[in-house]
Length: 388
Image (cartoon, rainbow, N blue to C red; front, side, top):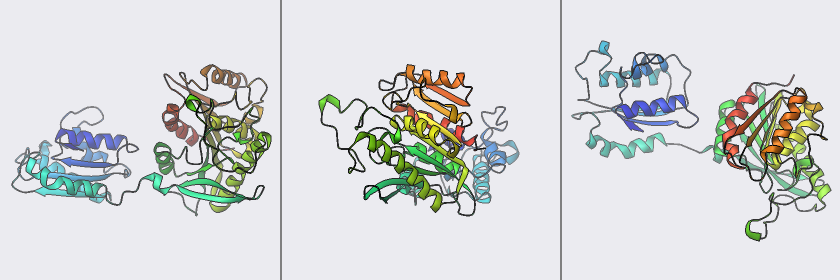
């Protein structure tokens, strides 16, 4: 939201970062020829002259206002300094391009008129948020019968509005960390990227919150270092019938494969664009399952991979099967749970084997913050690769 030049700035932020800002309220917007540069030789006038008409429609909802006695009202259009003409042109181009917009022209009022704001601001806010549903509300909570133990196991599914039964659609399997559940990676930033990229995003339980997805972990539990201050950790979410650690690892892996199979049967999944990602325990699980079932994945992403407690060591765990599977690793250099030195050792091994990979080390990144930090790079990485 903004007024005058602030309104032009508000639209600029939304135009450049629609993943962050999708609703704009503009009072007496300065969509005129001020602050020219190489990108916008006519300043904000270029929004209605070139940017909007010559670009694909952005996912924006825009509320515009201009006053009858606004700035430059007697200036000819050729001068590109008439606020009224500029905003009328904005309304016309938004209509032509099919944007959801509302245009308010206030009579007997001036530039950023306080009386107008008092009268219209509640309506403006109601309009820009009309019919809004957060992406998290579209995450489907599902379960299926895990016949090995006769239990209902949960899993979560998000389906981009761009997914179609008439074409192949990309799929991401997202593995949660120790103590998490099927919704752990179903966070706004991830969902926004999945929506924009046309993905089906699936979060399996992995049998329970400490199953390790088949990796030969030394233990099971709900946290890498237990509950804080000696408190009793919560019981694992998901299945409870299996208690033997080795068996838990086995059924954890099987649960992921079951969910993958169900999604493939339900949706028109692109086998060449099926991806695997995970955080912490899930990051180690992504490396483990990505290697074991290398022919399944177009690319693999691991965030702060807890490979040591998973029982995985780059000197003994062969990465040869994934020599044709691109891999991206995101790691914080201040992670107290997964030391950066261990992850660097994996990267050294990838370099030694000449594997296609990308390593992002986040300065000051801790164990949790690197999820949101790394998601944009992970989706950009996935977009570059298809399975051969």
